Length: 497
Image (cartoon, rainbow, N blue to C red; front, top):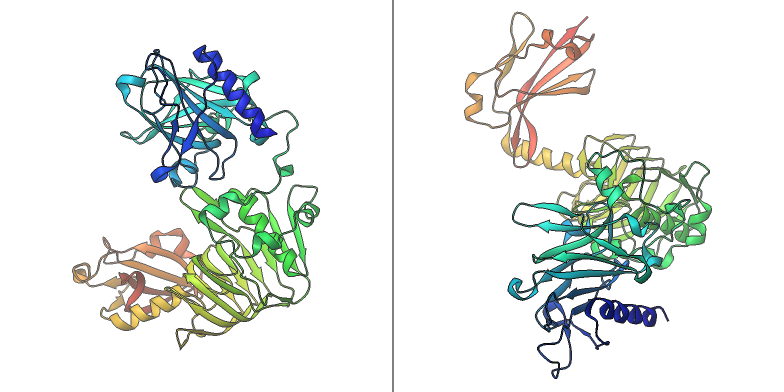
């Protein structure tokens, strides 16, 4: 029924702009380009628009695109449209995007001065008011999006039109979300009064286009997800079954862009994932950020038989940022993919404590608990993990493992010492051997500062407030070797009282 209504709507719009009766238009998907076709008997003097159906890649708010010529000519075979949603990461991630970005190609001599029309489905606008719609055109030569403020809204026919003189990529955005992203600080958000975006059904299309979903989509329970919403807008998942755990993964990976909703996961029982293809919680594509930023409390329980085999960041948490995982155990886990780690694949400023992992990982930059460790902290964690026949249990992260290999291969080649004022010193010619020299400074066993040493042969710690705090200090010279910063010198120690 909905499709019939939109076909009728398109016919009315063509009639309004062109002043002639309806003609049939079909989409041609040859070579990934969508173009319109009309009867070969059409008169060359008759005004005929080009038309294509879009939205099949997942962005459903825009259903059809028309290009209506300025003159009385048939351009139905001279214009090419391509739905770029999910196929072009830059355009798919535009702030405030409404529907699909569409590439429009044509002969400017024939088409310039015509009118581009986007037909939208009001049921798919996700609360965006039609009067908040704004056309953008991507200036490929200069690499920026140009706002086309001459767009005209025809709310009765669910259409937005704009004059067109240049080929390229066109799209609709919520103008208020777009402008606020550039610092406009407008009070209006472009949404219908009373609209609550958290009440929208969770949609997996974007995740499925860019990531590996395993069995998560089929296991997730939206009724359970809705029951986890708290009065303050956060979500608390009390998890006892694979379905409930999958629901938490599903919600994060489909609804929690840029960590919009605080998420806490509380494991209440041991959970057996035998027979399921699991998918990481937290993923990323260019311009799209669904990192996991919440907390997981395992309460000493065990997740058994987790199986993940994907090309993405691979782990129970795929891409984590500022997240915490505590008191959670994994038994007989298998994790294969990019930078695999059983608990977290890519951990940025994360904290993992009291976790035990047992199983197998496969892939480059593999670690037992964490794959890539970027300023993260692991405490009281134990591992019994194999990687390609090698026992890597002693390496809680792939970063730690990589550093150890690079350090062993390079060895300690430089000497540093303390001068009469207890200042660490280095040889002047170290820069000729290594690039990117760094002083690594620990206080009471914890790194408190990493300071560039390329222009310093003496570390003037007395002039740095952070380093005058009382404690026991250790200083080592690091350099960038085989992809890691590794020690290239001995360590010197001194005390500040």
